[in-house]
Length: 287
Image (cartoon, rainbow, N blue to C red):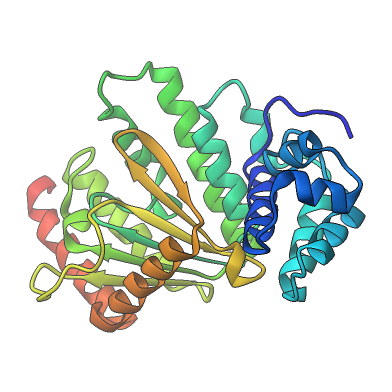
């Protein structure tokens, strides 16, 4: 198959899962190549996603590695035969790759979770609020870049809501009170958040300041459930950019984080009331 210069997030994930499968079988690249009738360099290229992998090759790979997880093998086969371009690819060369890969991850997610501590989750931001968030980046972005990033974020929301992807967001009170764009922008954002929380596929849960614990780290994170648990993905915002994790240890740790959030956060109805109260407090600042 032809070589790739810039494999996508999904293509890299397929290669990574093949490598995990080989390592769990205790096979080296040379030995696996011999069993597959391929050179060690071909094995390396498959695992680094530099070349495509056919459905037949995935099944042969799994058979040689004695992988009995048929659900995982079937999911990897589906990844191998995926064709067509995603809507986000229209933004190649316009936006950083991080933005495109988040949209790609969301497009294939069976369920999404977010834990936001500093700002409203991107999938629930109004255009005005998102623009204000991007305007705070240092050094400042040109107006055109802010507008493109904002439009992309709004499109991500439309896609996720259009697909009715189940989505649970846990939001710390600090994120609800950060006034990106000022009190009126925040008040409008909170009203939109309440409206979004009433959609059947979306759940919003608040973690107030007075909770006696703070689950997980302080970064904003998104957890995307895959077709099988082994293909779940963790995405984290950081000062160095967007990070993706998919080791079983990282995934297990974040599942525990969300389980903790589920047990400590306010209920959906109590969360809506909490958000309404903050919005009411803001009215006196701009009326």
